[in-house]
Image (cartoon, rainbow, N blue to C red; front, top):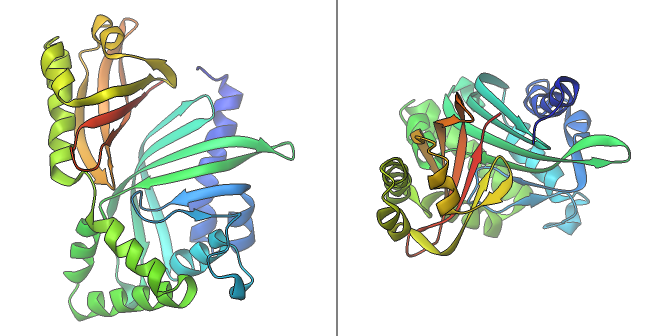
Length: 281
């Protein structure tokens, strides 16, 4: 779905306001960007934090407030380098490098895809769902390479998680960073694009679950229809986050070359592709 220039700018502004408010420590402003029933998956694969849920009712805070106090308030700053923005209807997808400065001045650079699903509440655009797709295991390894400061920073992060969200939640968070599609998912996503470009639908179907679903620019489609478009689809720079692999993509679409972002969900256990979402303008 194509947006008018003004509609596109308005939706992109909401998405961009989230990391900006986080960087400025504008807690109330950041929380106000999110709908009353918003959910944040950061990174995807770990427990969602919902604005209408109270994991720790004794704190007097909802889970999105606890998310802010745990992760955002624990950083010294947050920079964002953006390489691609895609706006389709009420969906904003961004290819970024997050540059947090954490406790003890430890800096990191985290390749991330941000997927914002927006809606309207009380007459204004708000974030209904945020998915942050980044490889937590790789980010941890980079932090640990900072030596004693890196280890100390990780200890501070763990302590904040236990303090605000509880040890049980922290254990589920850690487990979520270690499970999912991982390398087999990345390889399967790339293999699917190769099969589609070769019009080898038998090979493509072998990578899919029965009843796999497809969305092209948020419109439902199927494998045969995708193949008929002759997209010359390529994926690159895949990132596994939980059961989802995100990637930059390029294609030939309606007589032009397009760049966008793709999100492939894999079935736990079989590592077969169950949903593919292709986004470009």
